[in-house]
Length: 269
Image (cartoon, rainbow, N blue to C red; front, side):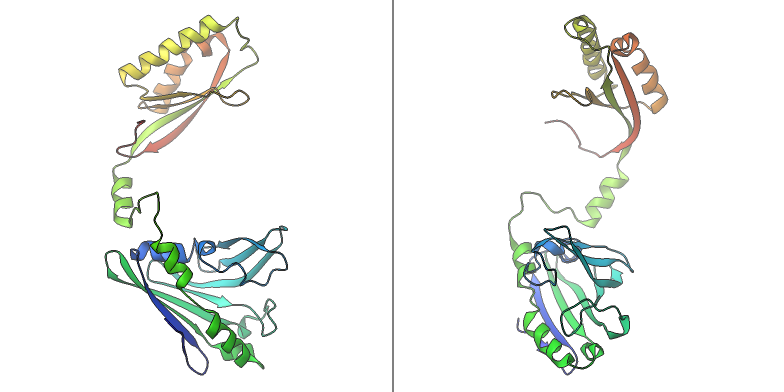
């Protein structure tokens, strides 16, 4: 849709094919996925954009030469219905350091269906930029577009969208587990210790068969951890189990304990 321009503001809107939570998240945290890469004031090509999702956060452009440009402040952040950020850019397209000379960009989101959202972007108070602000108004009036956002949201995605209610439901159904990270020691000298590793593996199979450790995954690449496991037991009980492991008893393995949470339906295929 073409922008609507008043004396000191300009506005553009679009109805996009996405639930409201997804439209808001992609516009904000995913800003770099739809923003035109040539619309920035870095000297170097744009590598990525960072949106800090809290009031007082910044929008920061990162260049391919590791340079950065923090050109906006988050003034309002109310997911999934509204976000407002400052336009800290001068009429000569440099970073504006005086917040009193910055205009504002407000974006509102309205669910018009379960999977459709009306997005309205209004760039206002452009007269705050001082002499020459009319040129800034004319530039942003022709520059603002939600076409990139609409295209990204309409594109097919290999991953299903998990809405907020689904997230809350899964979080409510999560349960406590214990993760074990197994590390080799300098005593792991093969093939001498292969019989110990065989006994260690047999015990792992027994732990899986009993349900005590439903997931055990040996690491197949040397130079790091030897394996990971998820136990249904609490940390103290898991520590007792691991202290009886043949590899730990012999000193060829050591381990770390990490309390974790798992979600319903998580399983190896």
